[in-house]
Image 1 (cartoon, rainbow, N blue to C red):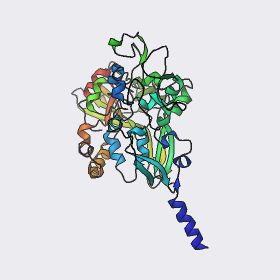
Image 2: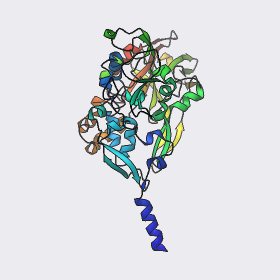
Image 3: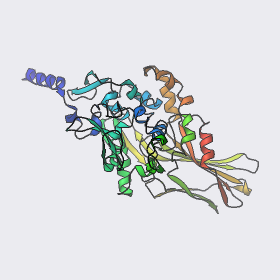
Image 4: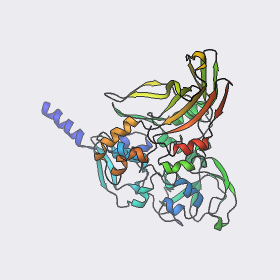
Length: 429
């Protein structure tokens, strides 16, 4: 009997289990099926799309999506022995054309034992484009087996096949940005941005903020097409771009902080700082659970010396070992507030002014130092970049700054333009 049971166990652990049976109903369980060339376009690469959609292409090149594969932090995380690489890549290079191998099944249903075969249609140029145009805008017709472009507006006459499906495009974000899934006890994906949006604004979409409207032609001027309502394609997020060179484009492409400083006052013995999530339809921070806001308050005496300091945090706290679990969450839902009250001692008016900052932190110094130490596990061509992560990779951005004159009871806010000039020069957390 024991021999029989051992045989059954070994059989089950060697059997090829279809991915659909392991990740039931999960779009991110597999990449998008192979996309043949698009009539009138060629291979469904961003550079081919950009031959006509020039302005949109130039915006996309500056986006987080275009940098999703070469992202230094992602490459460091991907190199960990605990990382199911093929699965992580389903969101970062999400089309089968972009994959060197095709995962056909999982050995015994174990996501650490993918069964892979070479991909005869691998397109290395398309792989480097990461989350490329076709991720949202190209699919295969089930009847003709030909690729077509998904549009949102209609009333156009492009050289390629097109189907209008605005709802599909608006919902596409949720396939990666609204998933919480426990892979094992210490490996959890936790992204609930879509659910957060629906709880505050059931009719809202990600497009409203992250692809702001702009009046322009969809294509280059030489094609003489009319001006229409289009969307910026910079996919602006939390204001911490993937390279320092991208800071200069953040505001132009539509960035503004979700948080606003609704109030800063000092009355009697109490400083009150009130922050409101005024501009984000989801919680702030959102997405990666290790993102957070650092709030810093400094008090200066008349000579400019810091005589008072306080700091607090808005975000999540997780324990990752031995079992992943969220232990704290004080993030701010849409249209709600965070109030910070302090009671400093100010003998004889020692504090003449206050400086308050909100810093959006994506990567802690402690974490990046660990990444540098373990960079030997990262393959080329990303190895050298991980070793220089503090020099190359923005860890955080100042998104709010104000100076409060204690005697006058007035504040002066630093402009977002000035903050982003400084952010481009900052290094580390």
